[in-house]
Length: 461
Ligand SMILES: Cc1cc2nc3c(=O)[nH]c(=O)nc-3n(C[C@H](O)[C@H](O)[C@H](O)COP(=O)(O)OP(=O)(O)OC[C@H]3O[C@@H](n4cnc5c(N)ncnc54)[C@H](O)[C@@H]3O)c2cc1C
Image (cartoon, rainbow, N blue to C red):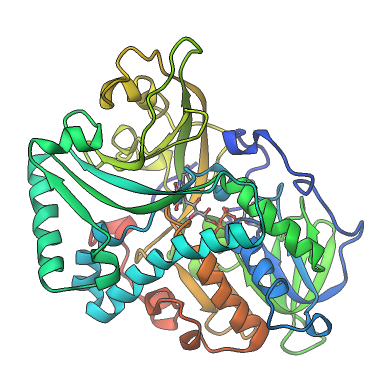
């Protein structure tokens, strides 16, 4: 399975590898609020990952909607709650403000680029606030994060970009957050061997499954009807009531006034017009631990390590000293079918697993004698975009149907506020432009009809 050809019907695979985050399951993991699928609802959400769960949360747990005015909301999930990319990711909440800003400015212009940067940056505070407000025990931690460069030419280009952005006073709130270190100090400051430049920014880390299940729990307590193990196999206009949608599942049908498709890389199974826009893309992540005889050094920051050959490994250290690290792109990226258009998270990616075997010993000062080893390794399916931006908003030509998908390997600093905006559109009739969601995310007919495709033809990459 997998290639740069679109998949005809990408549904979640039945089996999947258990990621570290899903080793402590919540009571709602397999939950069905009602034994039978309800016949109808006001708002139907499909997909219980970060996007679907936060859509439900924002629809039902906001203070603006009076309890009597709350819509009836049903959430369908093909497998267990939070068993897709969200339950399998790196737990890294890291706005890519500095590393992407120059490219965004060139591609989209200054205003749209700054909007994207600020939106990501705002997620650190937004997630911190909701964790506190809802008192969710999810190991959330604010931190600093290092972007590590080991190749002198790449580091020099990064510095040039940084100085230009700084001189121009661009994205004031975000650029002021950046500390750039290069030369002899870089290794010492970052703790990474061979580092020639490091860029420090604000970030966060979290146990993603626990965060999501905390929010899901709140939404269920406010009336959400959760139906796990209920894949939606198709969604069609109601022949009886104009403007309504009928979702078909193996357990029967459900009619909804409005629907939110939050199915990530699997979106084109329900919305074929996205088959060359959002592709399933398999990623790999692992947990590294040390034998009890060795106390792992504390890492004060999180990391993205650019170690050459197109790598961009993401890494956090948990309170227990263990490391969650994912990436490994150099080991598999040229074998397209092993990851692109691939929906199989029940297997690893060939050649990628061994990438992490001595990762800490090889790259981090003080870990040489650690005996650190991969304790658990897993894969997950992301939604990659032909034009590198998520698709969010009302689906062109399908009134009352909304999509929020294609968050790539970068949903954590993007989805929470996106879904707040989607909930405002769906629940309160706001226009996309009134929600604060970056304009580049808006799903439009023009984007759907565009031939631009970085995944198939490598444009822009
Ligand atoms: C290995 C890996 C590491 C990552 N690391 C990071 C990281 O450190 N930081 C970061 O920001 N991002 C990371 N990401 C990306 C991030 O996890 C995603 O962007 C984000 O979780 C997407 O959330 P989602 O709700 O859109 O998708 P998902 O979490 O995949 O949720 C979609 C849900 O829809 C369900 N579904 C699909 N089709 C149907 C259907 N027809 N009927 C019913 N249900 C359906 C699926 O089962 C799934 O539960 C990583 C991803 C992976 C795979």
